[in-house]
Image (cartoon, rainbow, N blue to C red):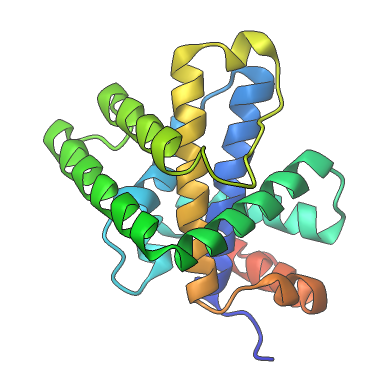
Amino acid sequence: MARPDAQETMALAALFQALSEVRGIAEHGRRDSRRIRPCLQGLLGAYQGSVSELYAGADGLSTGLQTLVEHLSQPQNLQLTRYLVAIMQLERRLARDKQRLQALISDLDRARSQAQYFDAVDHSNVIDNLADIYARQISPHRPRIVVQGHAQHLQDAGNAAMIRSLLLSAIRAAGLWRANGGGRIRLVLQRRAVVESARAQLGET
C-alpha cells in the first residue's frame, strides 16, 4: 500500500476540521469563522484536482491537521471517533445511491450560485440553505448523526444551521479523502504514516 500523499492528508484534515468545529459549536457555542470558512469553501468551491488549493492550504486547515495528529496519535475523544465513522459510512452510502447523489449535487450547485451572489460562503442565507439541503438529503438516511452538546447551544437556530452545514462539509471532505486514496484500512494499517504526513504539512519535524 502506497504511503498517504499530501492531497489525501489534506482531505482528511478537512474532515477533522469540520467535525472539530461541529463540536466547538455544540459543546461551547463557539464559532470561529477563520476555521469554518475553509470547510464551507471546500464544500462549495470547484475542485480542480488540488485539495490543498480548494481549502486554502495548510493555513486554512491548520486546526484540522493538528486535530488529525492528536486524535490518530492518541485517541481520547470517543465522540469525535463516532462522528468520523458515521460521516465515512454516510459518504460511502451516498456514493452508491446515484439518484440521491445527483440531487445533492444539483442542490449544492444552486447553493454555490447563492454564495457567489452574496460573495460569502458563510452568509446567513447560504448557511440556512445548506442546512435545509442537509435536512432533506442526508438526515433521513442512516446512520443518522446525533450531535452531542449543550441544549442552549443546540437549540439556537443559527448554531443548528451551521452544524448541519459543517456536517455537509465533512461528507464532502470524506469523499475527497476516499477519491485521493483514503480508506478505513489506511487508518488501521498506516496510522503512523498518516500522522507523519500531517506533521509534514504543518511544517513539523
